[in-house]
Length: 122
Figure 1 (tube, rainbow, N blue to C red):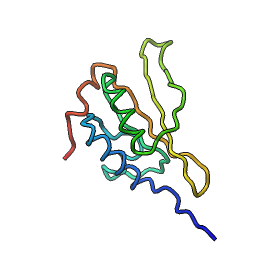
Figure 2 (figure 1 turned 60 degrees about the vertical axis):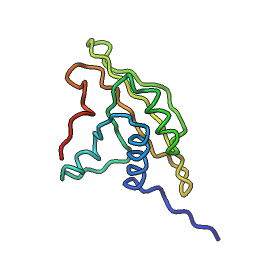
Figure 3 (figure 1 turned 180 degrees about the horizontal axis):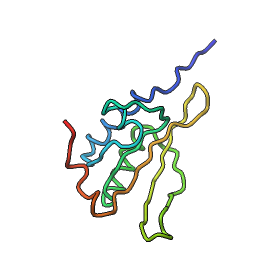
Figure 4 (figure 1 turned 90 degrees about the horizontal axis):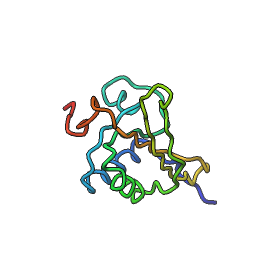
């Protein structure tokens, strides 16, 4: 009998961070995991990274190398209100249960978010 261990969100975050840093792609962890890192745990089932649009190709390559090789269609929001928001989604298949663990790359296109990868909370 074979048993599979489900994907661990924190281990996968470490893998993604290692891949992004190895590729020298600036990023910021955001969403539910960022809240947890700051001491405000929240149930979350994905990894959200804020990146600069100029780093899309490098970020996609790094995330794919980390095993997140199932792409989804690019999502665009905010067009009606003139605030374009883009999300690129790459997922990894969980062999234990067939579900997907997702990395969402949120493109930091607005001026207030530029340079977000240069700041830190340490």
